[in-house]
Image 1 (cartoon, helix red, strand yellow):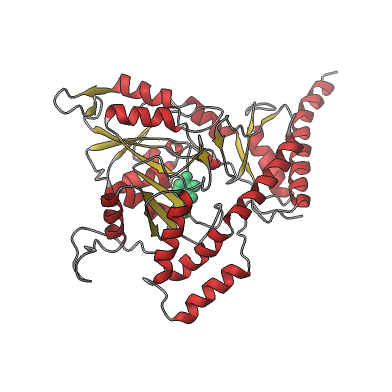
Image 2 (cartoon, helix red, strand yellow):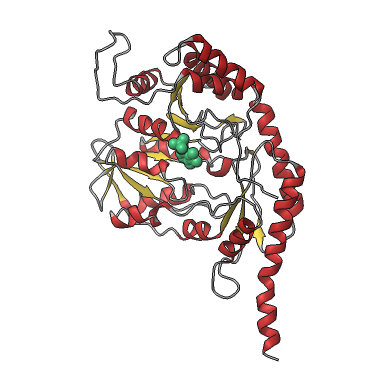
Length: 405
Ligand SMILES: *Cc1c(COP(=O)(O)O)cnc(C)c1O
């Protein structure tokens, strides 16, 4: 049996909406863009949504809109997809990686406080926080809601308020998730979603910036469209901008997915429940934990190996991953730590803080298939294959003990 890691859920509704755009003659800058933005804003519970051609473009625009640049630092997580840090590098800002909580795998607010206490000086006149090692100013926190679980936002927002920092939420993996009854995307000055086909909903490629701030929304719209001044004529460019527009074809796909989103999320939830039932009680892995008052949605189903170097000195996670792939199961070692990536090592963008939990998680996490059309049979097959591989992990030890006799 073959089970992909992810798979988009496309129904007749998507095909109908996309076909209508194709027949309409207006493929971009048309009515579907605004409609998608309005419906998406309403779904998240924010005033403004600005559609972008990818989640990465959305992150880049968010950083530009806040004016974050070469003299600045932004606190973020190294346990993420590389885009949440690349957006800082595009603007020559320095990422400051602080460690994650080993259970939730999200940015640990205590570590943020520790960094500010140990590494920053407050300028008496302005109140600005200067990193004493780099001379740069701390401008923002960029929390990533990893694998669909919201970050612990209350302490993060407290720290931001106390220190006059901006907050940019990377909610690309967490559409529909809630923290204390509030949707992710409503906490930061800006928040970003993504619609690549492995996400909770897709537009093929695509992303969205959301905000309650009218001026930031206007800046994002202008940056998306070559820096055009919205109130003036077509070819008047008031700032350096980009072409990060999302076409009406993509937005039509997004409108259909948004209409079906609650159902898509419920079916992912059902798949997660099946995993949890089948895998509970295995002592080699930790299943995803959801703290009280956190409502997650499902991006992938992450399991964490409790003893990553058990066995003959190799990484148990990587051996099991290979066995799953050999059995036709799509899986991934999400995430390799960003600061360990070759590009980051070569350019010397390495953390000043120690990141033991980030590094442990990147060596012990395994992403299992998650998609709304997964059948019970497919999930059972993934679990059976995984449990058999875990069982095998204990056998070489037994053999080596036996050969000694
Ligand atoms: C998917 C994702 C993004 C955006 O990715 P795109 O492929 O550019 O849409 C950003 N951050 C995280 C954490 C993601 O998972």
